[in-house]
Amino acid sequence: MVSKNLPFTKEEILKIIEKYPTPFHIYDEKAIRENARKLKSAFKDIPGFKEFFAVKALPNPFILKILKEEGFGADCSSLPELILAEKAGMTGNDIMFSSNDTPAEEFIKAKELGGYINLDDISHIDYLERSAGLPDIICFRYNPGPLKEGNAIIGKPEEAKYGFTREQMFEGYRILRDRGVKRFGMHTMVASNELNPDYFVETARILFELIVEISKELNINFEFVNLGGGIGIPYRPEEEPVSYEAIAKGVKEAYEATITANGLHPLKVFMECGRVITGPYGYLISRVRHLKHTYKDYVGMDSCMANLMRPGMYGAYHHITVLGKENEPPVRKYDVTGSLCENNDKFAIDRPLPEIEIGDILVIHDTGAHGHAMGFNYNGKLRSAELLLREDGSVVQIRRAETIEDYFATLDFEALKDFK
Ligand SMILES: *Cc1c(COP(=O)(O)O)cnc(C)c1O
Image 1 (cartoon, rainbow, N blue to C red):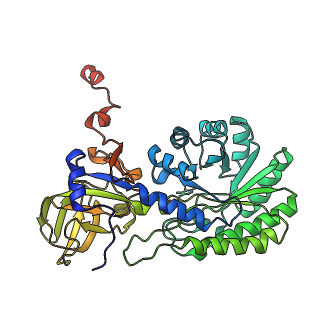
Image 2: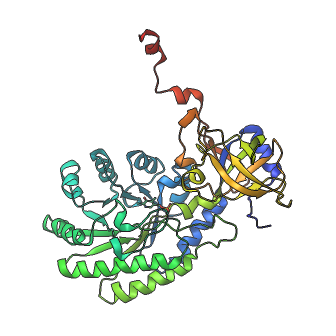
C-alpha cells in the first residue's frame, strides 16, 4: 500500500489529545527548518537569493518567527499580514508587499515598514503616490498573457486579474523613471502547485529577457527580480517533490545567458513560495465521530471543510492515514466527511481505507499551507487550534481553538433585547 511518513506515533498523538482535543492542525518544526535550509542551500549560487514566505499560506506569527530565523522574509498582501510579519520581527527588506485591488492604508503600512512594494496595476502608480508617496524602490507584477501557459489552480495568465500587460510594463517604468524613482524590481506569479521545475526556469527566463529589454530601452537599473511562488508539493504518495536544485540550476543558466551576458549582473533573485515551505509539514488530526452506511459508506469526522477547505473547493487530494492501521489493507471505499450542511464537505471521496471504527484517529496530510488559513465559520463551525511539534518532541499551542464566544463576539445580544 502506498503510504506517507508521519513525524509522530499513535501513542504520542493520544497523549497530545489528552491536553488538546481534536480536531487540530499540528506542524513539524524540525521538518520546516530542514526544508528551509535545503531551499537556501540549493539557491546559494544565485546572487542575493531570498525567499519571502507567502504569509497567506500559514499566517501564524510563531511560524513566521521560525522562518525569519532561517533567513526568510515575508510576502504579505493585506494589512493583517503586514502586522503579523511585523510582530514576528520582519520589517524593511524582509517584507514584500504583493497585493491587488489594494486599499490606501495597506500601501501606507507597507511603506512605513520599509517593505518592497509590488504594484499590481499601472493605475496604482498615481494611487500609491497620492496615498503613501512613491518609495525609493518599486516593483511591478508582470502578467505575461498568452506568452505563458497557465495551470489548473491559477488559470491562464491572460484570464487572470493580476498584473501589468507587456506594454504597461514599459509605460509604467517610464512614468516612474520620469518621476525620479531610481531603483526597480520586477515580479510575476503565474503558477500554483506546479510540480514541473522547468516551469519556474521558463518564468525566470521570461522575466530576465524583459528586464534586459526594459533596462536598455529606458536606461534604468533593476535591483531584483521576484519569480513568485507556486512550487507544488507531492500531495499524492506516488508524486515526487520538486527538486530545488533543478530549479536553481536552470535559473542560474538563464541568468548567465541573459542578465550576465548583457552586463546587468548583479540582479537579486527572490521567490515568494508558501505551499512548498510549510505544506508537507502540517497535519490535521481528527477523530471519527460517526459511521454511516447508506448508498455509500461514510465516515463522519469531528472536523469539516471549515478546517480544511481544499478538497471541497478544488477537489484536491489530501492523503489520509488511519493511525495505528498503517499496515492494514484498504478493504473499503469511504467518503470521509465533515458536518457542514454542504454535500461538498468531504475530505475524500471513494477513498480506499482500512476498516474504520468510531473513535479512530485520522491524519489528513499536507495541511501546513492553505489549510487552517482558509478556515471559515459557515454553519457556525469554529476554527481549530494550531499546535507546533518542537524539535525536542514537546508540543506548544501556537493558536487556541475558537470558542462560541469568539463566534458571537461581533453580535450585540443586549441590543437584541430592545430590538422590536
Ligand atoms: C498565493 C501567492 C503566493 C504563494 O503561493 P504558493 O502556491 O503557496 O507558493 C505567492 N505570491 C502571491 C502573489 C500569491 O498570491
